[in-house]
Structure formats: C-alpha cells, structure tokens
Amino acid sequence: MTDHSTDLTAETAARAAELLKEHRASIDRLDAILVFTLAERFKHTQGVGRLKAVHDLPPSDPAREETQIARLQELAVQADLDPEFAKEFLNFIIQEVIRHHKKHQS
Image 1: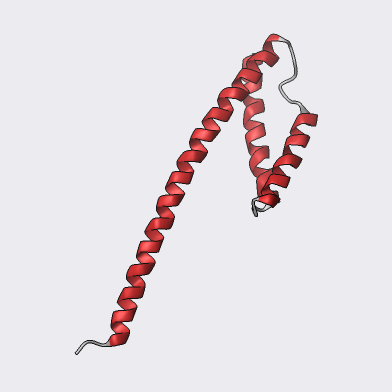
Image 2: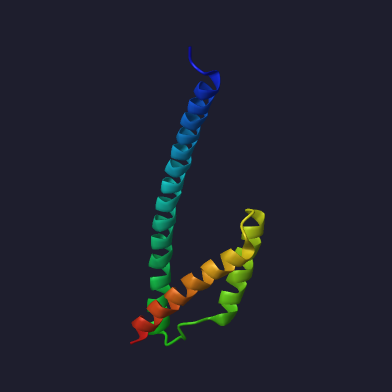
C-alpha cells in the first residue's frame, strides 16, 4: 500500500517543477525581448550620436536625460517596478549612449 502523503509530496514537487519550467521559459522570452529592444534603441541613439557629431553638439543633453529619467520612473510606478531601479537602469544606458556619442566625435 502506498503512502498518500508521499504521493502528494511527489505531485507537489512535480507541479512545482512544471511551474518553475514555465516561469523560466517566460523569463528567457523576456530576456530575448530586452536584448532586441536594447539593440533597436542603440541603433537610434547611434544615429543621434552621428547627428550630434556632424552638427558639433555635445554628446550629453542633461535636460533631456533628466526628463527621460523622470518619465521612466513614472512608467515604473505604473508598471509596479521599483522606480529607483528604473532610474539606475536608465542611467546605465545613458552613460553607455554618451560613451558611444563621444566615440563619434573623435
């Protein structure tokens, strides 16, 4: 005779493993979306960098950056994402964009 509690434990573990697999598959899809979205974003910021270089504009636009950070933080609140994380994430991206813009000006 089988122990009913052992069957439930095995069932619970199997269901947990299946849920974990589903979550990980979603995470993998979202990671791919993030990478392709960032690539598209950088294509546009590289175009901005080339325009700035041709027109001798500074690589950084602090007013625009401040506006974008505030905008992204508001979107984060709406999306139930930590706005401080969103700010840090955008700051990281902005610094990378500025680095690219400076390369265009060299």
